[in-house]
Image (tube, rainbow, N blue to C red):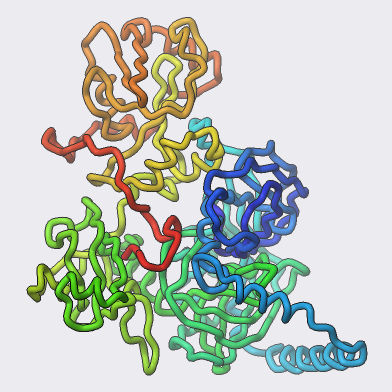
Length: 634
């Protein structure tokens, strides 16, 4: 839904941009011209972006939407706003600047070579490729890699009662035994049909999506046909590789229909931003080519063991051959989660915004005697830590593992890695023991780990957004896909600030928008309203769209009084609004006045004592919004 990882490249938007995802596409080339986004006014690193690797195609191009981009190579639509923030994390290995390094890249790229040297180099390259291809030609593990054909139908977030025109994409997957396949979540996002085809076969088999992990960009597929599994040998998941270990990426990228093999080495292993899931998990950086269509394909070591899943690439004018693989530790966590719970529940989080303690004066002020620990600056109200920790606490250990002043912990031999890595090894519901210094006193506390609760979600559970139509007033929750579809300029700076800086105060809280007004006699004078947050109905603060529907259904007053931001009020006569509903639905061809999820009884899980007065805070809600390395969410 958002700019995606498996077609993952990194590049920033100016006005008009080509977005190449990593799946292959036959969609006609059509580009939308983007208005300069508010986020582009900040000095983030221009010209770099993370992309997913799926190929997308469509029988015909759909009408353009502001804030989206289409490209025939990857075909699938990728909205650019969130990618801009992701890309700034990666440029020159930092979240900002890097001018000296950029200059070095440029000067290196301008070095000239003698014509004979170039010819010699190309001959050697061809020979190397032929030898490698010959060695792998008969490798049995190649037969476990399959091609994925997916038909996608994305929701229309501006018109939430309908969906957009379908399009198709291709990617890769591989067999893991027990009648199951692994691929990337973005390869089967908003799927209406998934088919797979084995190497050397001309038959496509229908597959089902059993589980989808948006945060880790992994999906689990199943094929019911016994014929598909005849003679199949599933892959074995190998260990986490070391630097400079050889790696072979296998899949079905653009450029042909048969299987493709590229080879490289492991360049880096660290906590990496996953563009599709807007999360930070362990990732393997490699220099083997990953192209549109490689998404979901396996990466092998020299022993033929699968060391991970190809899912995104970094594209920049200053860098080349930077691809990313989901390591087997993340894959195993996903599979274990599914086996434990019968569904995927997600990676847990502490729900803390932490500040590094590199400055000696800062540590001395906090009475931290050694060079270690991270400072708690903000706590999510929905996390268990909200009841245990306090702002100003210093976390010095996690399950008795010391946390450095840069927010890192020991990792293998002679390596360190981001503190978030330890949290990602846990499961939702696990308990972690934290060593904390509070006002100079050391103590140990226990915290239950839970997945993060986003006030403005990056993805919509169930695929279709909720909506409620009252006398032509269309209400829907604010989400990142809606922001991208509507274009940030039409959403407004105040709502964008809430989306970027507000935390959910309880599970299920939403920002409810009046998306648009369907003109009718009953709503005369309100027709021009759009993308405004509704705060109260008849004096009651609105918690989410289901709560709004409940308030409307239970209202016995003569008038429905809606209070919006900036003290704007909309008043409707309740009986007239109810009577006009069927006529409005008929005039606009809308099947129902509300989405199916709002037909369920409303359950109040908050209570009347919950404080709902504070609208937004003063710090970003994700690592993608933070402009420097001093702060990090865990």
